[in-house]
Structures are given as structure tokens and as C-alpha cells.
Amino acid sequence: MADMDVFAAMGIAGFGKKVSKKQLDAGRFDKNKRQEVCCQATGSPGALEEEDQHEAGPSRSMGPPALPTKDTSPDDDDGSDDPGPPPPPTNGSNFEGEPEFDPDQNADEDADMEQFPISHELMLKDHTKVISALALDPSGARIVSGSHDYDCKLWDFGGMGMSCKPFKTWEPAGSYHIHDIKFSNDGRRFLVVSGTTQAKLYDRDGEEKATYVKGDMYIRDMKNTAGHVGELSSCAWHPKDADNFITSSADSTIRIWDVENRRKQKTVIVVKSKERGTRTKVTACNYSPDGRYVAGACLDGTLHLWKTNSNLVRPDMTVQTAHTKGTETGSLVFSVDGNSILTRGGDDTVKLWDLRSFKKPVAERSNVLTLYPSTNAIFSPDNKYVVTGAGASGKGGKGSLLFLRRDNLEVEKQLEVDATPVVVQWHPKINQIVTGLTNGQICVLYSPQTSLNGAKLLLNKGPAKKPTIEDMSDALAAPTIITPHALPMFRDGEIARGSKRKRERDRQDPQKSRRPELPVTGPGRGGRVGASATQHVVQNLVRDTTRDEDPREALLKFAKVGEEDPQWTGAWRVNQPKPVFAEVEEEKEDEETL
Image (cartoon, rainbow, N blue to C red; front, side):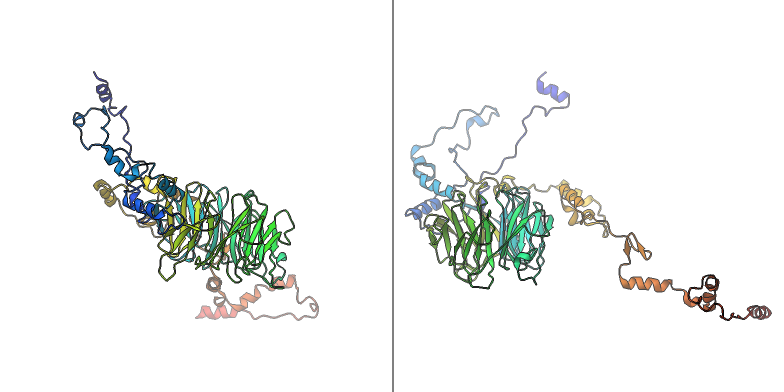
């Protein structure tokens, strides 16, 4: 008996068979490929020829192509597991005629494509207004976005479906715009800074952990207030100490906070304006990579640097006219080596500063249209390029992403996007560029060859499972139980459509799983009085029975107590006349006769 027959007799006929793996579509990235990789390339003379080659050839998003094979072969019909001999090579003339298969001919193009992961894009659509803040966690698995629609949203690439929707949405500060969001270096929490005076701390799942105190607006000396008294503009985490962060505000201060102490800041840096006796708004702040410097950019155009090991009274380095007075500097970023600072001004300029010669900028790029004060500029992961957004010239027009060379800030590439880019982040681990646009969309740019995980995870899951007739019949046959007064996590319908993990998470949430309060049956039960003062008064009116009681009996029932303990009539008790009360017996006799 053959082995397979023995297995069949034992009821384990499928034992030893190789499990069939889910085959991913080889062209799954093609639908997210951009129609035009770059709209302008002014940095290299042969850029236009490279662009023409890219558009003429087939998609380059699939990695190294395999050799073409024949569709059918005579050996395929016998059902043998032997793969057979390899297919014969194709004609050499045809192989050389396709430029994408020649590594020598396209070496420059491959290097150019690997420099900027912009060949494909993924659009995340859920906000309704301009994206003003973006942050990625250190692993590149999650995105936190803030918008002018007052909402913060958490996106997770690993748990996201093809619908590309966030898994959590909340309003951190009511009807205030979100100004800045920063993830901590360990990725366990993030800060949210809005138009209020209080910064808020959240864990990576979006649960609020702390709200830091606001200061007293009637105190003139900013060093004597426990917190900010003006709207916040930006924040930054300490690069070495995960328990410290800084915030900047319109009250002309930069405050250093301890995560555990939400009642008062650790240190206050009071920024003095160049105009004597006035304050100036601090629009951006940041730490140097080694934590030795704190930098701040102000509304009056100045740029200050303080040493963290000093008393922080006077800045160590200052540039008075870094940007035009009255314009808000959107971002302030240090390079990896800590010797350069990149600023994005509201005066339509991008400037690069060297700390070793801090009086004048090393390079400057002008005429970069700025439409929103939170527009930023960043360094590329290899520190060779600078990335920033340029606004659209007209209403409803298309904006562009600028890739500038670091040494002279000349345009290397200009990428056209659907709307004006406001916030740009380039994650070094997943090698993907995340951009927040003015139309409320988040554009994730990536390359199938050089990018890792991130937006690629959505397409690696394969197509969604199509519902079968059995699934539909089971869903229709299931009884519908309507429980309108149940807790939201146990309610049937759209709310209870989530997964088991979501229900367990909601069960641990004290707000979602809070037991409804019991009704009040007396003056007070369980440490609570009635629902309102009106209800308490009404309950006492109902209990009042004095109108059904004889007033004479109500007064005489305290006569005996008054004789034994005369608290109020003890002074004239000696000469007090004795009261004589009428007899009640005659009234009783009259009632009997009737």
C-alpha cells in the first residue's frame, strides 16, 4: 500500500502536502504609480532625456525583470512535478533594444530613481481642511496628523485596509487649530500643540496622559508664571532625555518641561525683542542633535541659540535679521552633524546657516511661495538635499515639492502635487516622504525598490476576500437583537462591527466601559445628591406633610421637653405664669352624641 493510501485510510490524507501560499499580484504597485515622476529637473543637463526614457519604457516599479518565457510548452501537459529544462534565451537583438534591461545604459537613471522615492504615491483622505502638522513614529509604522478642522487622526500602515482610513480620531483642544505634533524618540508617546496655552501628551494609541498647566496672564514677569500665557506655536523633544521637551509660545518664552511634572515647567527662557521693552512671538524651536543648544526663531526676524548648560538668560548666538520682520518662520531644523541650521521663513525664503560662521546664511533660496505659517523644510536622510513645499500661484492650483541641493540650495527636482504642500516628513527607516496638503489629503510618496514597509504594506496584503453565498446567508439568518440602552461597545449594528481586539481595547477604556449611574431614590445615595437643585426641592415638597397635621398638637408635643430643659425661658422661670389649656373631653362628648 502506498504511503498516500495509508494516510487516506487513517483520515489524514492531507498530511505532508505543501501548504499553498497566497500569490501576490506582480503588478500590484502599478495602480499607485505616478503619471509623471518629476515635472521639472533643473539640476542635471540630461534630466529631460532621462524623463523621456522613463515615460517611453514600461513600468520600473517591479524591480529587476525576469527573462521572458514561453506561454506553453509540451512538457506541461503530463502533470509531472519536474520543472524541466530552462527556457531558451531570447534573441539578443530584441534584448538590447529595450533600454530598461541594460544596466549600463540606465545606471544614471537607476541612481536618480533611488535618490528620491517619488515614483509611486498613496493618498490618505479623511481630513476636511489643510494639514498643519504631521509626525511619524521612529519605526515608521504610524502617522499622527493634525489639521485646521480641529481633529487629530492616527493612521497605522500595518492595520490599515484598502480604504485607507485612520483608526482613531479626536479633538485635542476643541475649536483650536493644531500647530505641531512630535513623537518622542522612543515612540511611546507624542506631544500635541494647538492654539491653546496648554500642551497635551498622548500615548501611541491616542489616549491622553497629561495636560500641562497654563500660566497666570496677569503676571508681567514671564519667569514667575507656572506655564504659558499665550498660544503655543511648536514643540520639540530632547534628543537624549526622553523625559524632557520644550514648547514655544506667543508670550515670548521657550519653556523646558519634565514629562512627569505637569504643574510647572523646569526652566523658562525669556526671549527679548530687539525693540526695547516689547515682546515677540517665538514661532519655532528645536534642540540640536547632541542636546547642547536650544534654538528659537521669532516673529521679529531674529534667530537665537542658547547653550543648555548655561543659565539661559542671554543667547549664546543671535542673528538679528535672519528673516523679514513680521513673518512667521515655519520650521527650524538642525543637520545630523549639528553644524548647520535650516530655516523656512514666511518671507518665501529657505536659508541654510552654519554655526561656525553664524552672521550670514551659507545658502539662500528665495521666491518659494509660503501660504501657511506652519510650512516646513527638512533635510534628506543622507543630508545631501533639502525638501520643502512651494505654494500654488493661484487658487485651486497645483503646488510642488522642491528637492534642493544642500550646498547651494539649487533645485535638483521639482515634483508637482495636487495641492500646496504644507508639512513634509522624510522617514529615514522606511525611506518614504509623507506630505500634508491644503486639500486635507496626506500624500505618501514611495518607491517599490528602495522603500521598506509603510505604504507598501497595504498592497502586500493582496486583494480583499470576496463574500460568498454562504457568508451572506449566515449574515441574513442571524437574528437581530436591538439593545438601545446597552453600552456602546456591546451595542449591535455599526458600532459593534469592529474586531475582537477593538472590543477588548474598549473594555479597558474607563470612559467607554463606565457603568451608568444609578437613579437617586433619597436625599443622597452613594455619595451623590439629586441630579439637580430643582429635583431636590421638588422631592422635599412632596415629602412635606405639615398641612395635614394639627398645629396645636405639633406645638404641644414639645411642651414636656420645654419644661425639663428650658433653654430660652430659664431666666424668668420663677415668676412665669402657668398656662391653662382647654379641656378636649367636651368636644369628644359632642361628637359621640352626634
